[in-house]
Length: 99
Image (cartoon, rainbow, N blue to C red):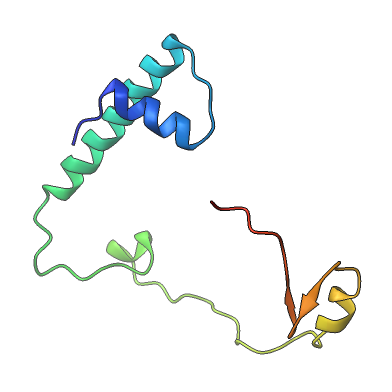
């Protein structure tokens, strides 16, 4: 996948960024380099390989020290929503921001 300068212009418009021609050209090079790396990684045959939970697990047996998943703080929803301008059914209501 290779981006063009019109792709960069569209991305900049969607992100509400104003890019100079120099910045646009540098971003085009960086993005295409990134996509080149992604394509190289996708080309590697990984059939029959199990995904790793941790990168060190490839060469060393490790046990992840995970804490117990339990509630440690009381529910303070009402206290946290007291300062909100509008709340309905326990949810914050905000103005629509996406057209």
